[in-house]
Amino acid sequence: MLQDLHSPAATDAASEAHRHAYNAAFHLLDLSWHWDPVAFAAIHRYGRAGLKDWVQHEQPHLLRAYDLDFLVDAIESTKARCLAAYEHHAAKQGSVLLAA
Image 1: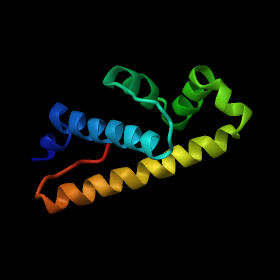
Image 2: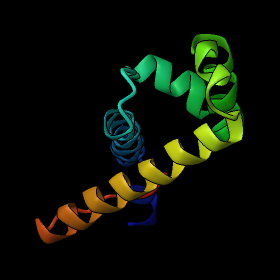
Image 3: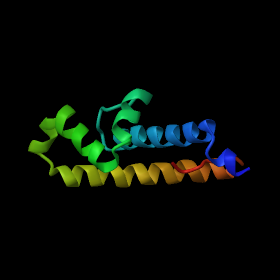
């Protein structure tokens, strides 16, 4: 059973849940961004530093209006709320989502 916790399918499901939570956060923050699985994997492996680097290189115009840490904090906190809502919904449906 413990091996199931680390199976590729469980990891992929958790990773996809996080990716969808980021995309939902972008939508809620009126950011017209969308991460596909490849972009998400490249960015997410570096955590917060990866997100900061991505914003600096792909969306530098936003840094004229927003402090980088403020923007990343807003994205991360909104993503956390989206993920929690997804996990709550999955639990009510009887699904199991393993956090990455």
